[in-house]
Length: 449
Image (cartoon, rainbow, N blue to C red; front, side, top):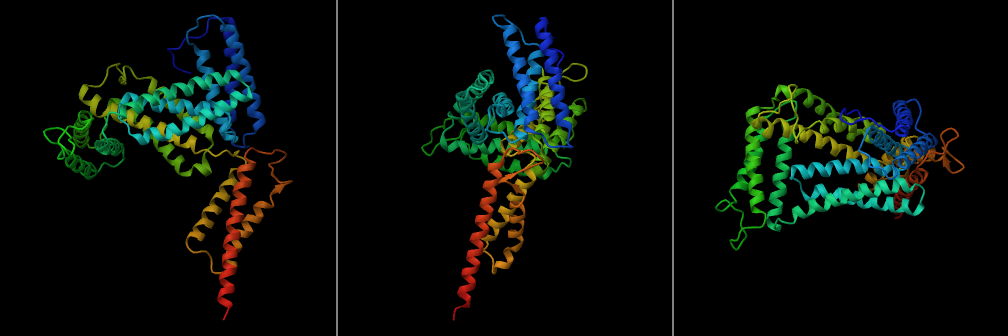
């Protein structure tokens, strides 16, 4: 949105739409920053409806006209992006607006995989499943016919993602089954080497371990090729050999640089390290500390850095690219690794988001913890007496007693996610009951002569 290359609108009608959208975006950002109260559904829906109304006006103004992208389009994207994260925050994950932010992240990840041309089947599997779920959400939204405008927009975004995913899957089809495991091993080594290169403390022995593994793989080649049992060259051998050479060169350069990063790229590197580390912490404490709208700022920072590349590379303060040696083997590759890693964290945090309002998350998280404890007790052989279940029973009943007319209320509001919380509470009660019955049966059996 703040990229200077994008011009402002020339049409007076578009200028008015831009002003209105900027006001909406400001309110969304202020609400995002407010941690004094939880996000209410009605507050989000008012801003969502106002955004849809402005986009309708924009489409009417542009009807039949050829219009280049301008700042209005960027602000529309920012509004939808933030609204999408708000829908996750209020627990409406399975509604079409929530799909907008996730499709953006998936598209970005797929674009990076296409650019790098190094990926494994595991990279594609999760995104394939996510796109199937998003397709179903958009289809259900289409049947409801509530907002055809958003339906068309999301359908196009999902289609582009699926098209990109299909192209990547085709690239993996060239590898013969016996060589695929070697290819995926090399992909893993390349990424782990990049990860070691970004650690605060560089340990050469970590790289030596990978070099030993690469040597073992190299020794399997016959006359420079990977061959089958009958002596024929395996399909994909050339690509795997190229990747092997690349891994060997990269480990040597990383060892030579010893974790030192070129000074002219240090400012970008420090920003990306900070983003990566913060997202890593969020991934560990997501259930208790994440408000999905927090991801907006990380996305925008990453998008801005990523879009500043010229022909795939960054320019230094003098507008010059790094020398070929540094550019190809250290700086650019490491920076791209950090960007992709951060987008990966954002994707993981989005798909892990629970369909429960943040107002109910404290209760939901407590029940999750209780369920894990009860399952662990059950898996370890149960309890020796009913008395051991008293703490679990008391906690479950205290949570159950919080309901008002069968609902978990927060003030006068009924937050989203009632079904998910009720289902989890029922599961905990069921586990607790099964453990109690088993303990009583064991006690009766012990009491018999």
